[in-house]
Image 1 (cartoon, rainbow, N blue to C red):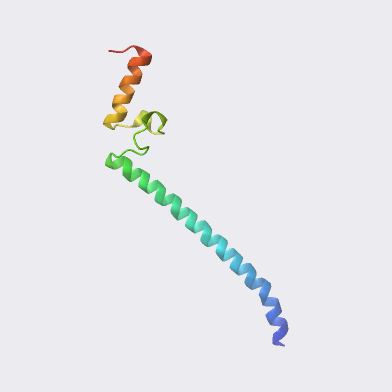
Image 2: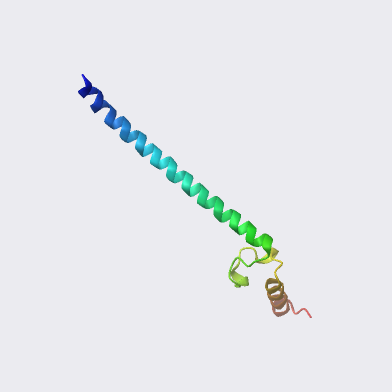
Amino acid sequence: MKEPLRRASVPARRLFITRMLRNVSLAVLGLAGGAVAVKRRRLLREGKCLNQGMCRMCDVFDDCGLPRALSTRNVVARIHGGER
C-alpha cells in the first residue's frame, strides 16, 4: 500500500523543489538588484563618482555636482556655446 503513495509523491516533490528553487533564485536576483541600487545611492550621496571619472558617458552627468563634472560641463558649454 505504501508503494503507490511513494510513486505519487515523487512528481509532487519534484514540482515542490522546482518551485522552491525558482522562488529562491528570484529572491536572490531581487536582493542583488536592491544592493546595487542602494550602493549607487550611497555613492551619489557621498559625492563619489559612479562612472570612474568618465563624465561625458555618465547617466547622471546633467545632475552631477562633483567638481570634475562641473568642469566638464563648463568646458563643453564653452566649446559648443561660445560662453566665457
